[in-house]
Image (cartoon, rainbow, N blue to C red; front, side):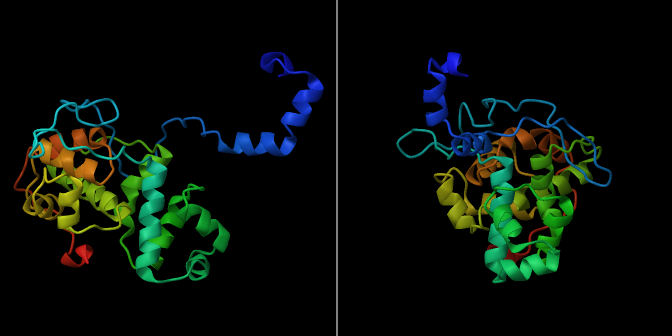
Amino acid sequence: MSDALALSRDRLRKKWTLEIFDRRMGRRPSPPQPLSTNAGITVFIPQQRPPDTHRDGTPETDAGPEPDGSPPTYPYPSSPTQLLASALSYLQRRSGYTLRHLASDVRVHPSYVSRILNGERDPSWEVTAGLAVACSADAADLLPLWNAVHHVATPSPSTPTQAVNLYRAVLRGLHLAAAAPSPQAICEASDYSLTTTDIVRALNGPRIPDWPTTQHLVLALRGRPADLYTVWQIASSSPGTEVTTISAGAFG
């Protein structure tokens, strides 16, 4: 290391103490995990890149420009870990339960729950589902977020009905991660590229909106549209399919 950094060994030992080295190593991102299968868990694998998008899912061209003609801008999509942590953190705040209370229900240490909510630890599905249930939420709404964190891969939905249900589950998870904003708040976050009617229909169904509407909604909720494109393709092939909806209470 001294040769690579052009430092003497004594200088290197003074500048890079074990404490500093451990702290820096702890901040390094984890290496990508290989895709694995998990029986009983359903997730989609995008098979095609959606039209008019960069590789990170942000649009190259947008429908619905602002009044001055410029396209709407969105914050960079959050990472899967950030989205899951945000969703769990929102559920904890909404429930009013303390970390100690939730930790007791899930049978883990309160400090571990705190690290999960801060995005410092990736919880197992058992812990994730337990926290959701303890907060009186539907664990299925968190499953797509958890799958993305843990790189769980199973075949894409084979029928429009399965795709529609997965489409709604992805949107519900992103909605929770964004702290369940109202349709008006999402409309504002999209720079009015979406109307409140667009948003309510996309979240509640029964029909699947077109791709530009889906793209803007996912971006407004800090997700990656590319991750939903294959599911949208399958789901939109049967727009009249009956689907699970978000209750009116989800909007507060």
